[in-house]
Length: 310
Image (cartoon, rainbow, N blue to C red; front, top):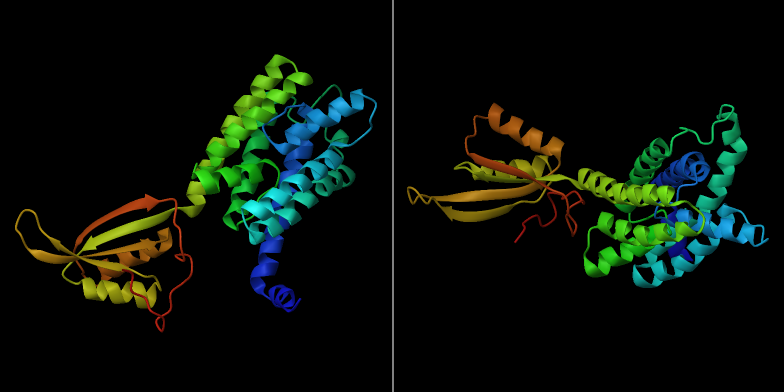
């Protein structure tokens, strides 16, 4: 109990709670305004819930799609807690359980009937445009949540499990699991709509990988310079990042030198280049993008801590 109270007092908790709520509100809007009216079944638990809800209604069992979403997510949350971890599980409990109520929220606040013109079946009145709008909005929401070790629940839980244990890219995991779910739509949708759903699932995986890479992208900077000590101090003391030093030998002239390597954000890289230019520091510089970083890189290093990287 004491640990819970301490967590509730932290800025990180409230910031991530706001991010999760905002992200899920946006995701729920995408589901309500683009996915449900178009009757598309894109590979997601929401899509599976649409299929199950339709079949149950045909069988005479009245149930709302939002209720099916809650039931399926509740089962998957147990897997998240056991296989992925308590933090991810706790966050996903929150996001998954509020998706259904948030869909109902949009239905009450701004019913889609108010936005449709006479004879219009969906918001964009074209399944391809509905698909693109839904996928892009959902992918952006998924990326933000994955970045804080959370998810939208449902299919994301399965994708995260595959990503963690098989080290498959998260977008690929979403696409494969989603394609299987899409095939269930043959029970309620014509072949054309199922194919559109499969394409949408594939686009969702691509967009998710793209957004994730962009959000996590960092610069891996390698500099060979005789003034490496000045650069080391600037990176550590001003940019507050760690760095690594390597002894190198020139292949052409055999000169001994030192290469300094660091992982920086785009802004930090720009500051480093400005520092070298304004202080007339010359060197051989290479820089490339890195989209996956593990460990404690994201924590700003402080001068009074041990800053050396082996």
